[in-house]
Length: 118
Image (tube, rainbow, N blue to C red; front, side, top):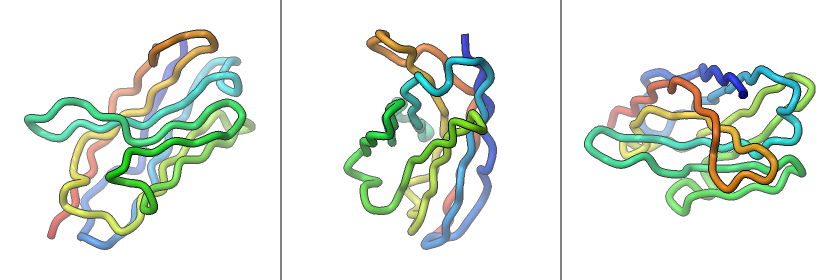
């Protein structure tokens, strides 16, 4: 099991930037696909971005071109750089890990709140 701890959330204004970090425990980090998800009040959790062990990335259409996911395997950390933030980006952001050969994300962090004011 991988333990994940997110940080970097906060309250910002529209147009600002934030960088979220997710520190992972365990020796399998470099082989895991990592993802960021978010859940806004009254809405279901949704995929934001993912990065494979090989560095391939995927993004939700709503954040493409504004958000960038990256990873530092030496630090067991995955990042989400969020630029040009919009009020609709307001949500709790969760980091998740998907193990090799798993079809879904297996381990989740506790979440970090991002609030974007207009």
